[in-house]
Image 1 (cartoon, rainbow, N blue to C red):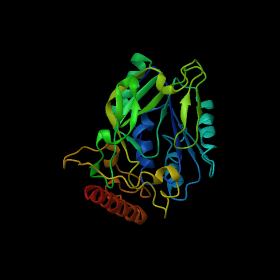
Image 2 (cartoon, one colour):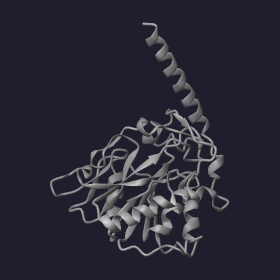
Image 3 (cartoon, helix red, strand yellow):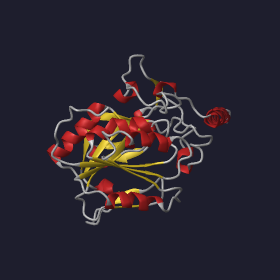
Image 4 (cartoon, rainbow, N blue to C red):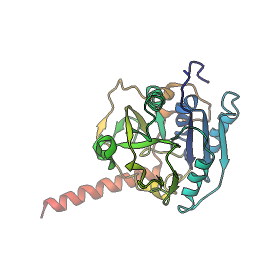
Length: 288
């Protein structure tokens, strides 16, 4: 249901989303931002699960069908992936773009803060930290377990990501293979991390280490995703933890219940083997 209480913002925003085999979280990711952006570009690169059908529920909704541009591109190589991102850049005529992956779910306060920050400060970039659930929805990784760095916002090792980008950066373009692709500018600073940024106080919920697809080997078929499946959790969420609001919303029957998500069998086996390997490695090291 469309939110009819959205305030008016000065800056305009297009959300960019490229997906493949994301049917576990795609509805929640889209629903968490769609009321708060001016346009949304969603490209699918060969999903074998229910991802496309779930996106279709938005296209069938009169409140959203004119806000979304959706394309089914079929499978692409890692080398072709930045060209897809570049095409989305070329299609964007708003003040900012907002990068949203199919496993990234925003709290309402976070997306509102993003809109207010770009109105107030007009920064080249907007960074936000994220909560990373792991193994299931009730455990999560420590902030410093992730290896991301952004010196412009004072984070040298942790769960932080640049999600908002000003379209006024000269020569803004995307390059690099899938998994390590990035955005660049043409005014001598090259890497986008060399541009000033603001850091939001809020976080988003990043489900990259959970099951993301209902298809058999739907996650394991994506090389970059395979690297994450052996990670283990550090902390348990408290019993009264408030998850993103969209997790509690009514949703189409085709959308999986966020609180009933389970790992693929192959993921569970891989994680068990990884734990055994790590214990054995520590044991051997202790016997030296």
